[in-house]
Amino acid sequence: MTDTSQNAPAAPRCAEDGLDTVKLFNMTINNVDLDEFLASLSGQIEAGTPGYAVTPNVDHVVEFDLNPEFREAYHDATYVLVDGTYILWAGRLFRKPFKQKLSGSDMIYWLSEYAAKKGYSIFLLGAEEGVADAAAQVLLAKYPGLTVAGTYSPPFGFEKDEASNNQVIERVRDSRADICFVALGSPKQDLWSWRHHRACGAKLCIGVGASIDFVAGRVKRAPVWMQRAGLEWVWRIIQEPVRMGKRYLVRDAHFLVLLWREFRGGTGT
Image 1: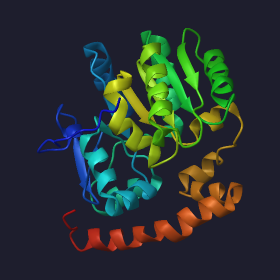
Image 2 (image 1 turned 30 degrees about the vertical axis):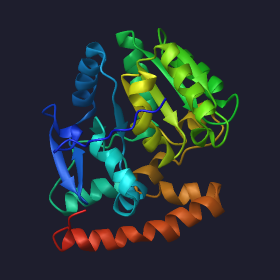
Image 3 (image 1 turned 180 degrees about the vertical axis):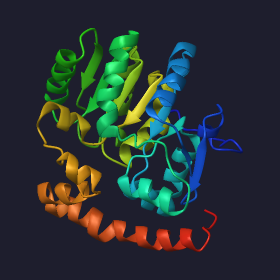
Image 4 (image 1 turned 90 degrees about the horizontal axis):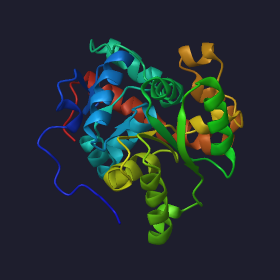
């Protein structure tokens, strides 16, 4: 029960509905503020059309350059919403300024508030057992009228087992949720949304990384001043030095190559 796109359209999907876009690091990224995104999303939900959003940060830009399958997922995404502070700064550097940073860690609150106002429902997928339930209680208390259609913490490696993966798809589909927050870590959450957004039926699947843990209070998010200063990665390394150190200090150093490439005029991917 998979739903992987077979034939990519000639142009990135995120550019199809008239929303402004910016080309940066060979990515086509929506240049929208929150209000513009929510207006478009309402149309998506009312039309009943399944879709998904990806949120580029430095890690995504590196993955996009190195992983052809990840590039396909980006190409087919309904929305590509700028997340990382460094991507925001790069836009200014290359005279392609973005209107607003729309990170997954903020979006889980903004979309839950919007869902409560509009009568839409949400599903929380990911995190360890019980964490999604705890996050749901926080969001329900914060946004009266919100409908949480379901929560599920799938077993590790579920996406590699057809029966387990189908169970996840069925849980989301049977919940009839309008918005599904997919907290599986990148690139897993983005590839899963790409492959299965139609089968699970949510009008928007959006990868939110550690956001369910943040909402539940299981993991503390970086202070606002560190977020604004582009130092959230330092905070994550302090919390998880081995895993995050390898990601940010070793693998994501490739971002410097991509910056130089963009400065020289970019390359085709």
